[in-house]
Length: 132
Image (cartoon, rainbow, N blue to C red; front, top):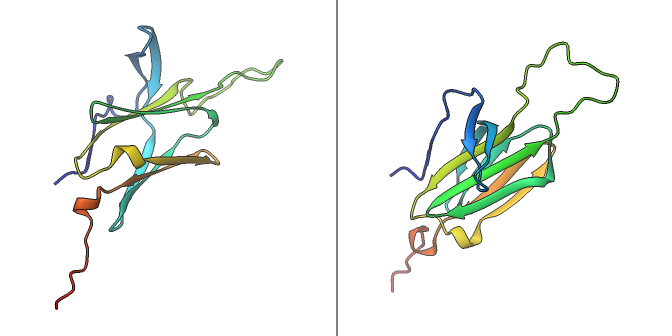
């Protein structure tokens, strides 16, 4: 069973998306890694240039939405000659499986890497049964 499924905006190219306020915004799909343990799934989302106060995580209708806003302004007097990364914010949308407990999701951001812990629901965790 697939735990998380993603909606990939055309490869990794910036895409215009409707924001929650009905405004059009430019987003790019961040790179991410997913791992699993008996108790949880670990999601690492790579969003260089994003500060903690510029990250929004929401769970709505079985979907985890991650938005990272970054400041792409250059210091005064500087001009961009070449830019490898697009001047866009990050957006990742993941559909959560029923095995994940959305009320216990935890996230932390350090050095541009957002680490999200997605705990498995108690009823799907492996447990040892004692034979009497």
